Image 1 (cartoon, rainbow, N blue to C red):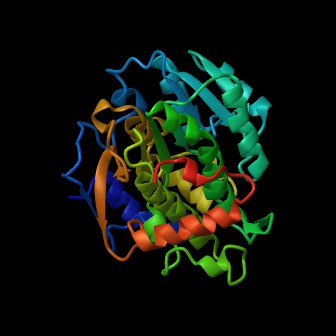
Image 2: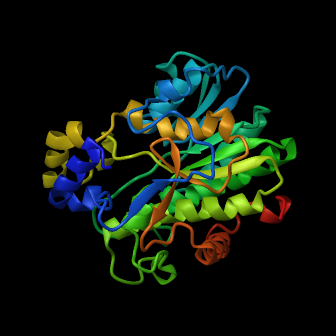
Length: 345
């Protein structure tokens, strides 16, 4: 049965297709994956709800994009529960303002995801503090809504939302594997199965070689997050480190600040009815990053605080495409990643 939010969202999707595309229930059916642990939380749950019983004292958590939206709320809740949160922002100043505004132990870090060297430097700063994250929440992301932008010869959303996070995770994983525990949470999206190009990852268009569609480019980057998580979970088997992807939901954050005026106005008017609050939006990534029941769950995809299966024409679980993406990613990040052979095969 559809929830009130899903009904409202489906009814208003046509008016703001570039932003909420993919949330209709017509083409894709989402069902709870009963083969994995199921919690007592749902789309109404907040980050504080899903962590209420936890004491994270002594844990280290890395959250990218801590200075606004879901990243800020995720950092706030983790720090509230006792974790030492490493919060990244595009500049150290932005990260510091955010970190200083929450209760608990936080450390600000600079991370410009469009700059691979910045990701290497961020990981180096963490290592220099003698810290190994217990959880990494790859949360930061952009949606340009506009014309093609290339950064270093790579389409910008693919570079920022996906490749920059790959470099960061790659640099941090060897220490996590050596310790034998940890969780990687990739913030993907329903857009990964509803907005990506029909063929999935269009490998011949990652540098803007063909026609550019902003909605498809965003979907492609989120599909890449999910496929990388899937392939990484295979790479990490037996290591004690897990990799899972999540969809936070449609959330009232500032990610639509660059959207066309009609979309921003429509979302401003209807957002309170169809979208989650940041507190609700942060719940799924917090749940996957901290829930004791999920300590050994890897390679799964979560929506509304539950592991789910998605039926319909999509590539979110396409193992062959995930393997091809892995190989292409190695090429595109060469010189900024340590050999993946340092991880268990």
